[in-house]
Image 1 (cartoon, helix red, strand yellow):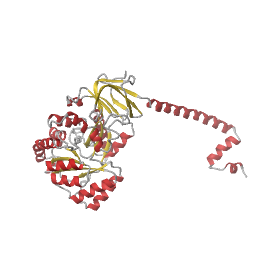
Image 2 (tube, rainbow, N blue to C red; image 1 turned 60 degrees about the vertical axis):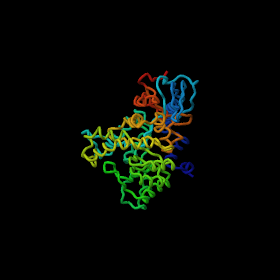
Image 3 (tube, rainbow, N blue to C red; image 1 turned 90 degrees about the horizontal axis):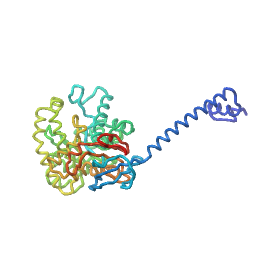
Image 4 (cartoon, one colour; image 1 turned 45 degrees about the horizontal axis):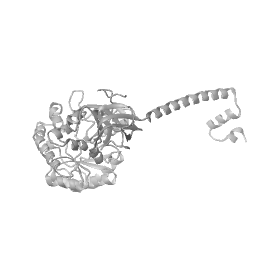
Length: 440
């Protein structure tokens, strides 16, 4: 039996064995070289181990006023963060970031955005880009300004590029909110129920976090029904079977009734809903996202940037202007319905990213929503609607460390939420050196 045969294995393994069994000048040099390489690798591993160890060190936030996202308020305490989560809330914790002169609360959640929508180089709305790279760049820009505005989680329901933005942010290098996406909305009313089942299965397989369904036209086109009850049942039923939530764009009362009875998760918009169907939503536990305020006002403020593109016509803008008071009346009636789960979504499009809080300000100032309820709708209740109530939307031990601070008291003045001075997402600080928010 030869030496090579006795060693066995691959050619590379046999060469390595010969270096040990019968060292030559060349093999000795190779061994020394390998030892040097091993020392280098060891040093690198030590460096990364040290970095990992450093990342595991706790971060303490000294807090003057804490809104926990569940309705509770604490004063003069401290939040200890470790490994991306809230380890404890303990007033006896040591020194850390000084947040004693601001109000601390959970990272905000917007349950309805279009993170990819943007204005092009000419300042006009650009529904399509020349390349996916350009589209992703705009989406990541929008994500950044949204995070800096205190929104650590958004649900984006309008474009396949949302998935690329989600994945890029999840890699942990680029700053942005946690993104949940529907990838491709279901908006083809010609599909049969069986075809809808197949469509939902395909979107789920492609990595969607939820299913978005258009059951109505845009309000610019009158908001009329587009899907039958059978089609709605097929869409939401298949989503449930795939373990996904379903979010339905819908305006009129009867279609909303069908949406709720079909077991869909969330009704979006609902401008033409009546009180009877609002009570049905409350009874069935269907979430309601009225999207009042920001989206329409943003369109009207940016009229010149949209006019002439798609259904952004003179008639469409006249319809939006006309429906502003209709939407506000609907929202006020919804507030009066006991146990109705009203979440916070803006339908943020081009021109609205980074200004997501304006819808909540509108709801409080124009709709007369209680500030505490408004904040809950954008924190713990929104998280619950996303099936993430055990992870985000509240400040408590074991939750993800999504924490923001604002200048002022939003319980007394909701506009304080415009003045975000500190942003932490998943235990990482993205904003916090300004306005005296510094480590101590």
